[in-house]
Image 1 (cartoon, rainbow, N blue to C red):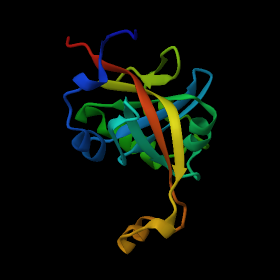
Image 2: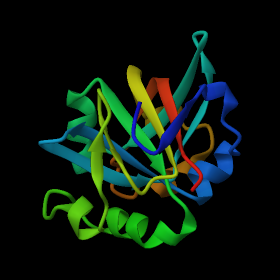
Image 3: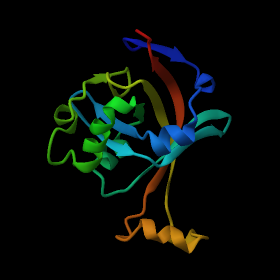
Image 4: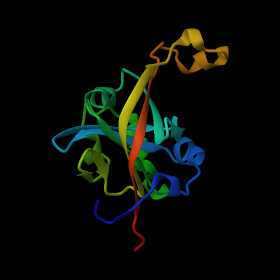
Length: 171
C-alpha cells in the first residue's frame, strides 16, 4: 500500500491507454531511494500477454534511465494531471547524469516495496520485467519508421507484468 492512493486491479483501470501514454505522457522510474532516475516517455502500451496484465515500454540505450531499468527488476510508470506538464517537460529535456531531475522538477520521490514513484502522480503503475527485445531496423516493414532513429540509437523494448496499480485518492 502506498499513502494517499487506492490500489485497484489492472483490469479496472478506466483510462484510455493511447491517450494516457501518447498524449498525457508518463515518467518511467527505476532504482531505489538512494539512487534512481526517471525519464519522460510517450511510447508504450498495456494489454494482456502470457495470461498476465502487461505494460511495454521503450528506452534508448543512450538514456541514463536505461542503466537503472537494466539493473532493476521493477520500475514504475507514473501519470500526472495536466497541471504537472511542466515537470514532465523538464524531465524529458534534462539528463539525470547532469542534475537531480526530481529535485529540480519539484517532484517528491517515494518508494513502494520494490521501486520509486512520485507523490504528485495521479496514477502509479508498478511493473516487474519479464522480457526484453532490441529494436532491429532490418525488421522495419514500413521504411518511414527509420525517421525516428537519425542516430541509429534503436530502443530496447521491455515487457513487464503489471504488479500493482494505484490511483490517487479523491480529496
